Length: 409
Image 1: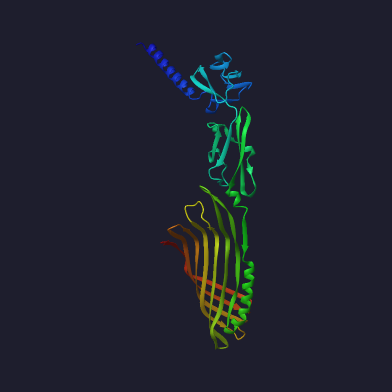
Image 2: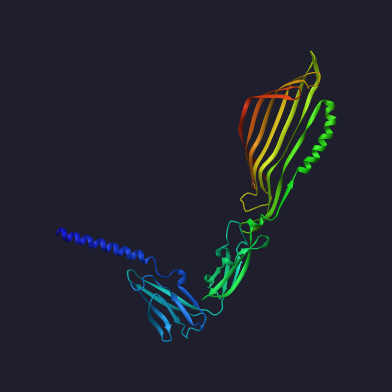
């Protein structure tokens, strides 16, 4: 075969492949989508429209075959057909097929079915009766039945008429439309659990309890001074919030949640051990003090069973610190007004980042223990010049904690 002939054959093959691929690709995109293959009309309706206007009208031939007139089956040309409903299409429940043939750069056939309906009603029930605050109800969340049956595809949600209602309820508006006419409609209320949880919150504070405790400590200190000791005024801070609402899983479940941003207190006492010993006009003695702080931070607890796989869930930080020190002191005859010096050894520990999960059969807690130890010196001159020095003996170290506690019936 000559070289020129080989080139002609090769070009022909390439063109043929492209034509086949092009027709195959175009055939995957027919004119009418699934929702346009079924058309509904009332008996004695004046006009019916099937198909739609195509962009390539003129380059592609659209040919219909169906019941367009009083004479039965006819053929018509054009992608979109508007025709008078024949008189014999007056029986509700009957259906008629219209076959569309497309010939051009692509070739395919589609069938449109015209359904004659008279009255359709429907009922709708939510499957769960609730949804979370970050979602929007969709049709699949509801059980829909029509009378007569088989017209569920005509029911839709009108999101323009859906809105948040009072008490955490959300109104969903359903409609059944035939040829632009709403034949039946229903409103359904479902609970929006995300909104409901925002409405029913009660916050509690511990400030008044702190005032009462400080009053008791003030009285106690009068007695404590006899033993050369003193209780530091305690500080109580924070509060908690109880939120009641609902959780949405397979069904609506009541929920109560405890939230603590910060809640705790700190206090301590100081004591001079024994009677000071006079040494060259100064007094030498032993002194100790104990300070502690306990509290909760960023704590969240589900008090009722929820949709979580866990029966109870606690998340947050339990923080605590204990400072225990003991040392010697030197004071002048004024009781330290002119000169006082104290040396001591102290230690602290704290618990942080605790998280506890309790299930039906076991529980576990994660967190960390922080420990440190230090030496400290404090000097007081003329009651108002104060200097304090602290040297770490053991720098803060974190020890991971893990507790597992099985439960048995």
